[in-house]
Image (cartoon, rainbow over all chains, first blue to last red; front, side):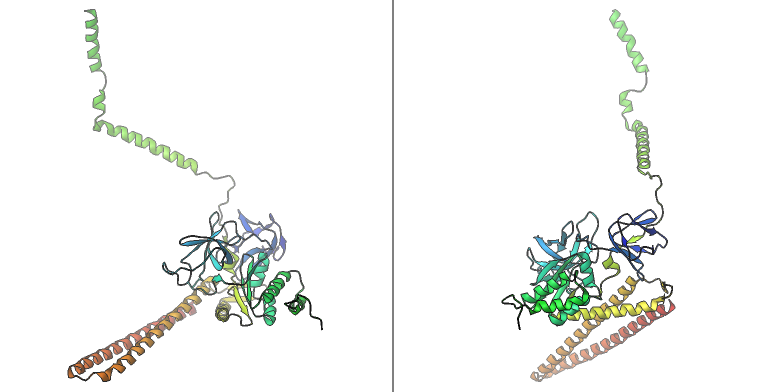
Length: 237
Length: 219
């Protein structure tokens, strides 16, 4: 299993045979008899501590998995539930009681088109996934409705990068612009800041960071900020 | 006359032959038939079950690996919502709490792990998984929350005491004084009982903590 670690694999590649039953496999890998095959094109990753293999790729179609934090859009409103679009093949189901402090007489006021930051709790094959606006401790902790702001779509790989610990892009943006961000594993990113100009700068920087060298990001931010809000032209000293 | 004779000869032959229909329809005659029919049905059922249990040639009888999602196994360092430049103070608090939890988890990991950097080998001292460690820490946090609730209840008791003090100077009658005495005695008794319960509860908690620590060290 170690030969193909951190290398690019293609669907059908034999990753290896089962030698240790404590090993776990994640998305993109499939077991057929005693061999493990790749079912997605991407880079094979391995976590030493967790003994966990998975494939990292840049796809855009989201496949729901348990404990994912996703951003969804409400598309239908029913008496005690909502239909939420989370970018997967089926729309997800959100109960009206899966909010902190929600009761029969106290339900959240949500309408079609609202954005919601939620967590996937049930994700079986051939079934509709279920989402919840509560953390594992049954508290809000950031989950719930996202008011205002702007949402952009990106690839799953970029969203994983933004959620990682060593993401300095968001920190550099935080130096120059006070803003708030919610990153969903399903490739959706929600940004909110004090003005539309700042929101546009943040979203453009995040989107273009895929194609820019790391040392060129900060000049890009400064150049974007220097554009005058009213005239749309670069200031000339 | 010839015809009449033929009929007479036929009737005794019928009576002489096997069992009549009316007799065979009676209950005691039906039991055997029902038993035979039941056995036939059971045989058919067993056949169908055997036929449905088929195994393809070259099938794999070994164990299968566990599959799980990256979010469930690895998790993320942040809560998923972040604010920069003190834009949203609530999110800052959440992220601080999350970072504290992560530090606790990593501290416990270091206890359970031996890492040989040369050989890139990790050996686990205990069979505890990372998820179990997380669950323990989360349960401890829940206990802390319960303690906070108890503190709130004690504050309410203090408020009640202050209210009673304000009402005292309005009363002047001797009968009311007697009632006062009884009420005060009851309050003292309750305070004693609460203190005793508090002491017991604290002892129990300490004992539980000691047991947990002993278990950990034994492991």
